[in-house]
Amino acid sequence: MALFIVITLIAVGILVATTLTVGFEGALPFFAFLVILLPGESRISFGDLFVVTSTRVIIATMVVLFFALGNQHPKSDRNNRLPLKYLLILYVVWRFVSTLNSVVFMTSLRVVLDNTLEFYLLYYILARSISNVKTIHKILAASIAALVVCCAFGAVERFTHWRVADLFPVVLHRLEAGEGGRLGPGDRLRSTFPHPILYANALALGIPWVLYFLSLAKTAAQKICLWGALIMMTWNIYKTGSRGPWLALAMSLVVLFFFLQGSIRKYLLVIAFLTVATLIVRPGVLETLTTTYHATRDPDSLRGTSYQYRYELMHAGVRAISHNVGRALWGFGPESFYHLGLEAEVALTGKTEELESCDSAWVEVMIEAGYVGLFLVAALLMGAALLSWKGFKTVPPPANSLCLVFMVSIGAYAFMMLSVEDFGWGQQTFMLWMILAMSVVYPRLASSGASLGKRSFQALPEFEGNSLRRPSDRPNRALAGARHFERG
Image 1 (tube, rainbow, N blue to C red):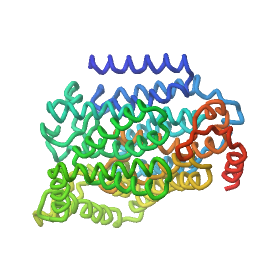
Image 2: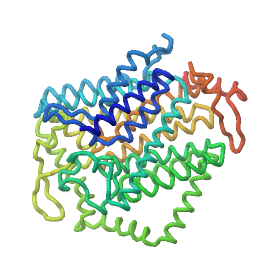
Image 3: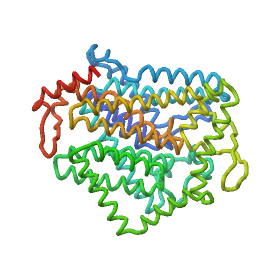
Image 4: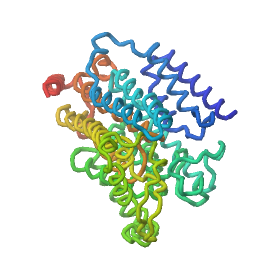
């Protein structure tokens, strides 16, 4: 408890001081750093009633600061349409409808209230507070910094078998239901995250951000730091042993290679060369990847059983909600999966056994919120991805490259939801909602010269090939892009 109090007081104190010094928007990067870095084990539990974590106290602090000091933009800016607003409201309302019909009403109500205050309100605050591109860059940079610190903890974990979470009381997270508690020494890295797969999810999102900043780097020192971060994050994601995030990262990099020009493509070629060189110099890495692939396709292996489990889970979920029209519409209620006792035939044993974990966020949403909830989640993610794609096509290059980075981040997260229960808890979920908020406001800011933050935006350099230019060097093109974006 003492460590929780110390961490929370220090974090809140710095947040308040930063807000009072540089304004609410200036404090957002440090806020992003904290919610990604801090472990869920930093908490105080009040029995089954509720749990207070350092992250929740920090979010509550930011909410108070936002309504007290943050919403200080001119009225014209506050009245800007909030993208995806109605979809998000509809989804929140539907979650409450599902809760009213939940088989575990109080559990569902607590989860819905937690998610609304933590994630949906976070989206609203960021989307309303970010007024210039510079803030988005700072939030991304702070997120990368948090992941680098996590990678340092991951290295310590790998070589000493000690984790930051060992400083706190043991917390049995939902993905560990069948693992007997904490993962022991020598197992996959998870740093400050609840599970290795969730840690890998975060790294799969962060690595493309590092590449984006590499394309903007102006000095040798910046490039060295970013390459160091890239190497650390790549090593850590490999050591998580998580197949879904590996594939999601690979697909993200392929999309960036084919759609972006200039230095990012050059850096991707360098990464491809280094990857091939590593596989040749370290044949054990290639052997590990090959063994993992064959084990995944072998239904008699543990990895093959884990892969097959996703299909068994999906079939069991469809059967469960198909017996009743109401359940098909609104499901069994948020956080109800672990109370349903769903069963399926396990491929490895051939026996019908209870499904102990929900290893797919999409299946979890379907079971707990019905097909309507599933559709609304898909529409939210797809809507944000389409807005980013639209921005990529309309925002003048090279500023449009960040739109594509946001789009691949959203797509990667949607893909990773197929293989892990990662929607609605964990640090990587905060990253998702920050991405959604930044992705829907960035195209407008980039096209219009950052709206109320023109001075900050014009201080940012733009890159075209190897030349450095500022937005003022080509005002006509930027204005044309802004007008086209507004018409679109």
